[in-house]
Length: 65
Image 1 (cartoon, rainbow, N blue to C red):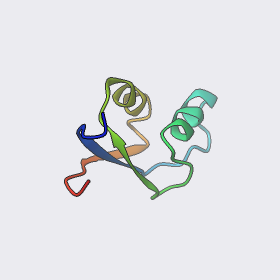
Image 2: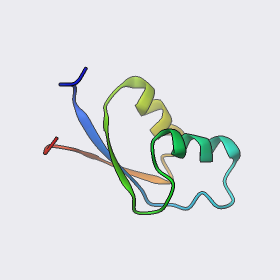
Image 3: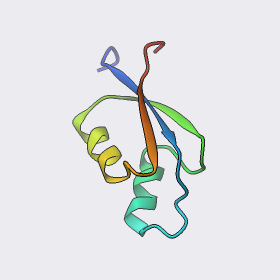
């Protein structure tokens, strides 16, 4: 899995006023403040989490990783 495709996820929206499960999903993705980014392995589980908070994040291919 270490050589799997990677994606860069950047938080663009604030968790203020969002539901507890959306906040927890952002924390699960390793995000907690706007404009922070994480490089994650592109798995169905990560894609599901991203889909849940798609209005709060931006997703890009991470070609450098």
